[in-house]
Length: 148
Picture 1 (cartoon, rainbow, N blue to C red):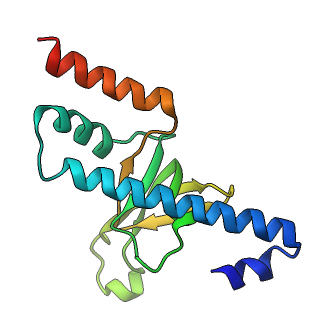
Picture 2 (cartoon, helix red, strand yellow):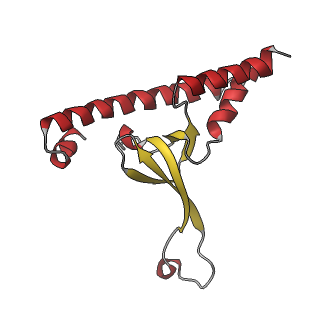
């Protein structure tokens, strides 16, 4: 990835900043995977709230692309979900039939470096975009579990 970035971004300072951004994206991906892994197996009342919050992102949420190709750069796995499209799984010629071609869901996210990156056959998980959002989840958990 670093060599590819060097070719795309010629100045050393730009390269250094993008390398730091890639490192930050790797940390975000690692933390998102850890958070998701901690809520899925337990599903205590507290974790069920966090689980439902994460697995139901909405357009314009900050998301982590779960079940993505492990070889894909982390910088392409986190960002803002900006669009959903449905595309045929193959061309009419490849399909070889007059029947309707099945479609699959494609997601477009705006990555941390401002590019638009397409995904399909993945799950988008919502992750807190800032401290205020993290606190709102904690408040919801407290209200649901402890205030009753």
